Image (cartoon, rainbow, N blue to C red):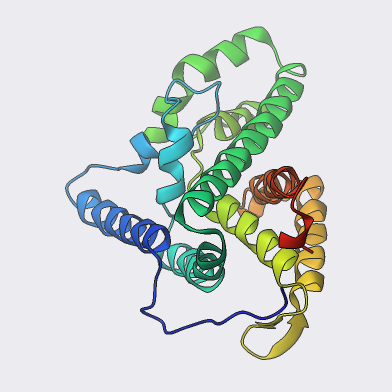
Length: 248
């Protein structure tokens, strides 16, 4: 399969359409409710498993939350661009499974790396300082403050800063698109043409580099992006184990 038909902007299959609608509704609801003092991110974003704010359902709900207009716009644009093509090929059921498996896989890898980093930092700290962060850190951040001590402040941010976004699942879609339409041309910033297979490889390598470079200041969950691609790769290989004609 090397050709695809992009269709019109409003030609949306059902799963992509409903995911788009839910994301937009929750983005608007977040913006509106913030004016009344209610922060939906406090309930629906995913927190570290070490945080008192962590709830298992956040593994799903965080995929429908976003940190700003640019964040939701580019994620939903990618969902529209790649997701509708994949759903038309796979059908709604398989696309639904793939989207949520990659989204959950992204959250799993992100939380796993986060947990490892937290345990590594805790090993360098005094037990009293660690217990103070674990018991009071969430409230400190809620007040718009943080600890003056460098290690305590870093630990507090790692434990009690929530993660939002559909980016993990979107990266999974990007990988699947690269598998199914390897020679399709993607225009980077609408100007620079690149074959999908090369785009996926370059982007994946870039995210891997940024993840290990530990660029805490960019506020991006790079390992969540990689998690979406890794779990997408595993699922595609599983589906394709006896029907190789469906994928490149």
